[in-house]
Amino acid sequence: MRIKQYLFTIIFVVSFTVFTKAFADEASPANFIIIYADDMGYADAGPFGDPKINTPAIDALVENGQTWTNFYATAPVCTPSRGALLTGKLPVRTGLYGDTISVFFPGSKQGLPHSEKTIAEVFHDNKYSTGMFGKWHLGDAPAFYPTRHGFDEWLGIPYSNDMDWEIDGVNFSNIFTPPEGAAAKWQTVIPRIQKNIFKREIADWQVPLISSKHVNDNTFEDTLLEKPANQNLITKRYTAESVRFMTESVQQNKPFFLFLSHSMPHVPLFRSPTFVNKSEQGIYGDVIEEIDWSVGEILRSLKTLNIDRKTYVIFTSDNGPWLLFGDHAGSAKPLRDGKGTTFEGGMRAMTMFSGPGIKPGIVSEIGVQTDLFTTLLSLAKITDRPLPQDSFDLTGALLKGEQSPRDFVPFYRGSELRAFRVNEHKIHFITEGAYNRPPKKQFHSTPLLINLNENIGEREDLLTNDRAITAKLLERATRFQQSFEKAPSILDRQFQ
Image 1 (cartoon, rainbow, N blue to C red):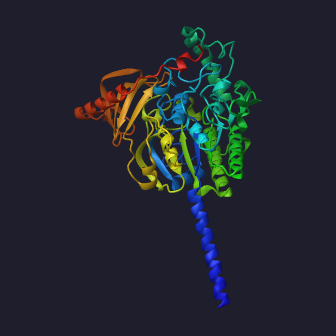
Image 2: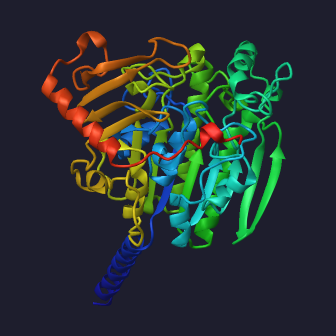
C-alpha cells in the first residue's frame, strides 16, 4: 500500500511539475530574434539552396519551421529595406528612399527619423531587453545610432562594409560635393574599388566597429572599438555578442528582442580562418556557411538556455544578390536578376519562421518585411498601440495554416512604383537592370503582365496577354498610390 502511495505521489509531482512548466512557458512572454543577411541570394540556402553550400542550421529552420517562398523586402537596396522592416512602413511613407542617392553614406547628417517608432522601441516600452548586433545603415551620426531608436545596446558597423575608403583623394567627404560632379568622381574610383573588393585587405575599408549602450533616458555610452573593423572575425563577433545578450536577458528574467544583422555576404567578402576553403562553392560559399554556423549557435544557445520553446526566430535578407561580382555573389535562381532591380530576384527573399505553434512546411503565401512589425507584436500579445499602415498580421498563416491577409506587393525603386503584384499576377510599369547592366530603363505605356506561377523567371517571351487582368492590377496600383502622400526623400538630402 505504501509503495502504491509512494508511486502515486511521484507520478503526481512529476505530472504537476511538467504541467506547471508548460503553463509557465505558455504564459511567460515570448522572445523574438530576427536574423538578417545582407545581399543573400534567394537560392543560397533553403528549398532551392545550392547543393555545394552546406547549411545544416538553416535547413533545420526549414524542416522544423515555416518557409515562405513569396516573401519580399520592400526595396532592392539596403537602407530603405532596413528602415521599412524596423518601422513597418514603406520607404516612400518615411522618406527613407532616394532617387539620386539610394542609401546612407559615411558622414551623413540625416538618419532614421525620430518621429518614426521602431519595433525595438515598442518592445522596449513593454519591458523587453532589446539588442542589435551588426550592420545598421540608417544614419552614422551618433544621434541616429540604434540606441537612439529603441535598442538597449548595439555593437556593429554603421553602414555597408564596402564604405569608408579614400582613393586618389576622393572620399565620402567630397564625392557628393558638388552633387552634379558625383557621377564623374564615381567613374574614376570604381575600377580601384572593384579591384579592392577582390583583393580583400582589411585596411582598404576603414569601416568602424562601434559599441553603443543606452544608459538611461538621455545618456549613452558610444565607443569606437576598431577602425578599420576586423571583418575576418566580424560574423563570429556579432554571434558571440548575440549569445551573451540572450544569456544576460535570461539571467535577468527579461524577455528579449534580438536583431542580428549580418554585414555579409555583402562584398567585400570576409570569413574567419575556420571557414577558409571550407565550402565547395569558393569564398562565397565559405561566407554563407559561416552565417549558417551563426544560425546554429543561436539555435543551440536557445536550447542551452531552455528558452527554445518560447522563442520565435525569423531568417531573411534585405534584398537579392549583388550580381556584379561573379563568384563573389549569390544566386536568385529561378528568379530574374538581383539587387538594385524590381524584378523578383531583387526583392524576393527566402524567409523562414520558427517558434512555438508555428506550423512546419513550405508555403506560397505572400508576405512583406513590413509585416514583421505587426506579426511579432501580435505573437507577443502587445495590442496597446496603433499599427503601421503597411504591416499585416501573418499569425493566422503561421499558426493556423490560414491564407495570408496580404495579396499584393508594391515594387518601388526610389520614389517610382515600378511594378505591382496582386496574387499570382505582376505588372511592370518600368523595367531596368541595375548598375549599368541590361535591360536599359524602359517605360511601358501598356504594363507588362506576368503570371508568376507560370513564368517565375519573368521571361518576356512568356508574357501573359489578358487586358482585363492588366486593367484590374492597374486600377489597384493607382488606388494604392493615391491612398497616401509620399514623404520627401531623406537620402537625397543626407548631406545638407
